[in-house]
Length: 291
Image (cartoon, rainbow, N blue to C red; front, side, top):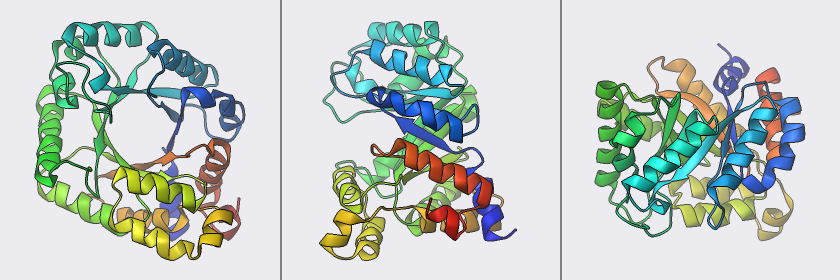
């Protein structure tokens, strides 16, 4: 398998995310990405759940598959969790991404394991449930605790039949995530992994988000690639080389847990969708990389 074939294979089930305020971008996004592409709808602070549900409905209207983020620390107690999950199901949401969220807990729910182990979730047959992966660490959280939590989620999936997958924080280089994947696999974890990649936005914007999200070793790669402050302000970042590195590794190792990539556009939804669609068709040759 050559590099372009490996890239096409990894992009075949690409996913992308939008905020509830960016749904106008779906008009064009739906014309370039295949029908049924997963579109993750982010949970923004200060937005009501209904706004997220309305955004998910728009994703569905465009022939795409909505995956709703749920920041569990915003849910105060099991009764509220039951009501929230009920509203999601009633609105036709079949796919979730559970994250703790950066805000302080509103009540007794502090982490996603509490939701995964809850009776409220067990009663509802979601088609897929994503959980967060942190190849370069989670700010303020001990690495051992992060690894242990993922191992417990993997056990829930295997023993309880939960349809879990991992979506990682975004990375700027392949090596850190490949090392993390190997470590997780050696620990017995079998969950499929979607690797987060930044979309086609400015390196300066990515540096800002990378520092706030705790992205570690691969952030140095972005700095090296970006060069001067002037270039940071004027160029557009493309995750082409990171994707190539991931695709080569997955093609060479059939046991690799990485199954797809997930794109964080940071506002550049349409250009990022076009880039992914070009890669699905052309394998990110030089012309596709400049799309």
